[in-house]
Length: 388
Image 1 (cartoon, rainbow, N blue to C red):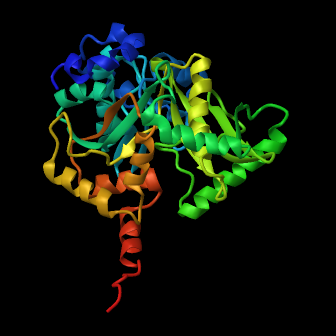
Image 2 (cartoon, rainbow, N blue to C red; image 1 turned 30 degrees about the vertical axis):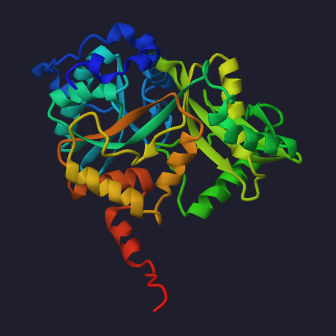
Image 3 (cartoon, helix red, strand yellow; image 1 turned 180 degrees about the horizontal axis):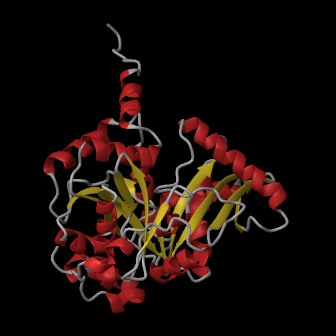
């Protein structure tokens, strides 16, 4: 990919219009030596309005709103209006996506973050970058590994009509006939004293059954006390909440990102299909143009439009097939596909080196687990040999 016009398929370009004035070129400017000391400073606690202002102006990556989560540090750039949200582990600075900034200044922003990392003797990684960031990172010597694909829905085209959506339509109708209802919920309204504890209980139980803590590097948190611009949709049955969704804004695309999707263990059949399709309808009616259900991890790894390590892609593909003890990759991908996304976008890991140190940093950011602890866990799992 040597040009942005080649990176973005024609059917998706209308969703780049809010940024069209930036989609001309990526600068390759370098940092002046006189600015070195100032650039190496880190501002971990700038006023919220500064971070929010940058997000609302330039937040393009579907996960950019997660820069507000408490597990992120913030590098506020000096040469351009930009912020890079990142975490640091073992001398690795792992950025959550690309710098949030005007697209035509992305090259300058990357240079600043690279210099900042260099001054702190940290290896830079960029996790879940969009295809728009690929040219600028390529020019700076980064390699890429496809992490998965992200489904997008154009809400002015989304419909439950037709044979392709028959299963979703029928499933949702089954839940509706059983008495399941869906509505948007506002966690700061007077009813919050009754509803919020139910959402917290559902979320806690859901996490317990999966043996993980609340993630926030590529997933948000429930954030009921400080919802910000998140939107909440709940499914109720017999006057109780049985499932919920949260969406976070993608400001620069007039869209939203489906962040949390959780339900009780005894949810009536079809509840999630009804909750998703009805939330899409309500979001579209409120003026939202685009919805993503979030990246399907490790989906279609070997179908990659840019050069990547064939060996690493093969290893990840095998892990997606045989790693069901960790995650139901194909099941999640199939669930998203049945809603018939209008297009898919790839996401990448951008790296210069990818050794033990870098892999350990990724695991700690995503799972709060070190590589050593994960290996220990795998080695201590029971081996099922089957009948002898």
